[in-house]
Structure formats: structure tokens, C-alpha cells
Amino acid sequence: IGILVSSLESVSVVEKDSIQQIQSHFLGTGTLVESLADISDYEESQVAMVLDIKKIDDNLTKKV
Image (cartoon, rainbow, N blue to C red; front, top):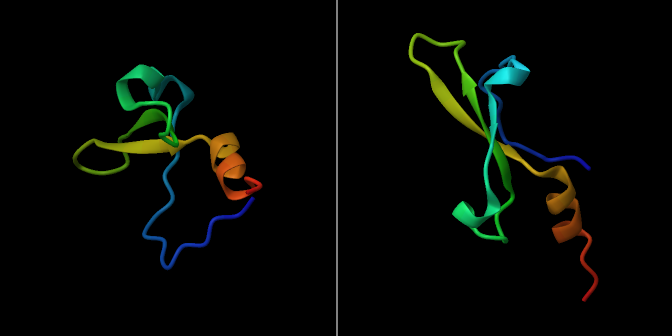
């Protein structure tokens, strides 16, 4: 699967221990967010959403 973006500002390296899984009952079953990652590449810490590739694939290839 590929995701087309119009621009890419930066690519961050995320340590595995900085990724926090999210319980699906907090966001609902329809969300594509799988976890949150703390990114410390910048002066201020930032949070990124990690998407569930399987859910994206399932939603893009759903047969109607």
C-alpha cells in the first residue's frame, strides 16, 4: 500500500519504547489510529499518530 502526500517536511526516528498503544474504546472502532509516538527531534516534544496499515488497506479495498 502507498500513501501519496503533497509534501514532506521531515522524517523523524521514533524509538520503539516511545510508542504508546491506544485502547480502541477511547477512539471508537472506526479510527485508523493505532498508537501515539513521542517525537523529540525538535526543541519541544511533539506527538504523532501512528496509523493502522491493515485498517487502511481494509478500508481502501472494501468490496461494495
